[in-house]
Amino acid sequence: MTVSESVPGAAAADGGPSAALLPAEPLADLMADGFPSANLFPPSILLARQVAAAKRRALFMVAVVLGVLLLAIAFTAMQQRSADRAKAETQARLDVVVAEKQQYAYVPAVYSAVSTAREELATAMGQEIQVTRLLGGLSAMQPPGVSLDTMAVTVGPATDQTLTAGQTVLPGVGEVTFTGESRTMQGIADWLERVRDNADYASPVLNEVTTTQDELYAFDAVAELTDQALSGRYVEATQ
Image (cartoon, rainbow, N blue to C red; front, side):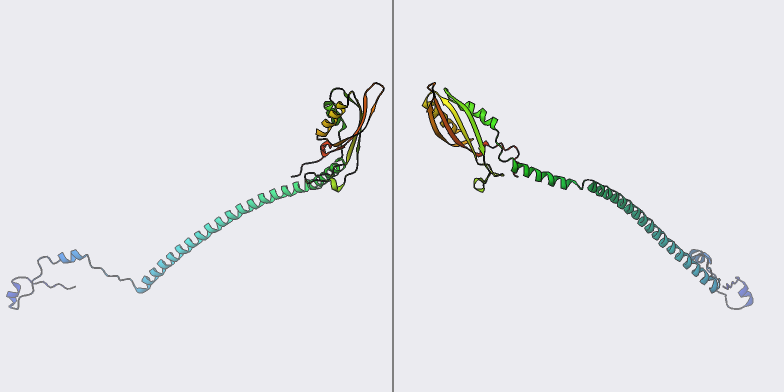
């Protein structure tokens, strides 16, 4: 930049035209816009700087990507270890269950055998009659002046015709024979009526009545046994 200056009086002295006058503050505008500068670096250096900046950005991006990959790998490894532990615990519990199953593998066979034995016992003992219970009931049924001498119980084989819907075992066909003495014929009639009203017996029949030397009436009677006379101790209730 070239700045020309003219001194007052010099032009007059030289006799030439008057020179242009400088502004009152020649550096004011320059100070307002900042000092002028010029980039004198050669293009090769500028290009090298741009390449170095691009390399730094690329290295930063690579580092970020590697960091993300490492975090993902660490998270995946942690999940894998957790899954392996859960698998190992599940396998251990499965091994225990399998061992217990093998230990008690005989239980179903035992239950089946017990169930079969119960069914066989119920079938075999389905015709059981507790005579002691019947005797106890007869003593309560005797009217005054009547006494029983003998009681004979006969239980026959079961038949399909005797099976009812409410029974689980075929009942036996039973019969009981009584012999006794009574002071009066009315006493025998009363006793037969009580036998007829008892649920253990059905269809009582008076076979024979004779007079003894003691002026007593000896009688012979027979009655059928009902299902109520069966003990039912080995018959299990159906579900």
